[in-house]
Amino acid sequence: MGDFTKSLSEILVKDIMNKSLISADSSTTVFQIANLMEKGGIGAIIVKKDNIPAGIITDRDFAIKITTQKLPLETPIDKVASYPLEKINSNESILVAAKLMSSKKIRKLAVVNDDKVIGIITSTDLVNQLALAKDNP
Image (cartoon, rainbow, N blue to C red; front, top):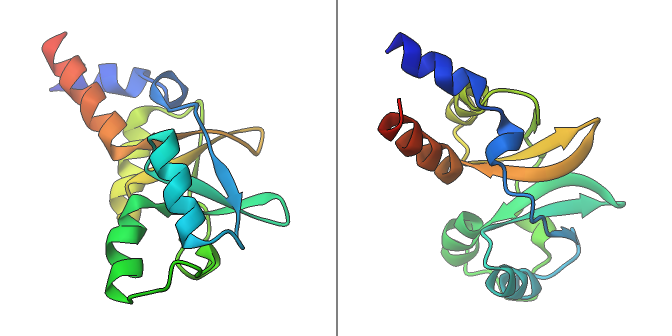
């Protein structure tokens, strides 16, 4: 197990993060966000307040918060987004990312470089990387 853990600690967040980022203002409606997700084929959008990345809205928010509360499609995402935006430095190892997701019980982290959001890393990215690492020791 030692070598396996060591190899994972050498893979950096920036190596496997998703660089295609979409952000939207917190006043954007749930309906508009659903359209952005569908068009972009993505499951998370960074939420900005005063043009600063402040939170995140995910496909899971739709499945849980919006559906269970029967919110109208005109609802601003500010009401359902998760704040604050959980971040990780792009030079951290994916092991650190996994521990952070686990401790905070979240599935997506914004990746930052010099306080600028440059990507997103998801639990799916980590699982895919794990599968690759295990097959190629």
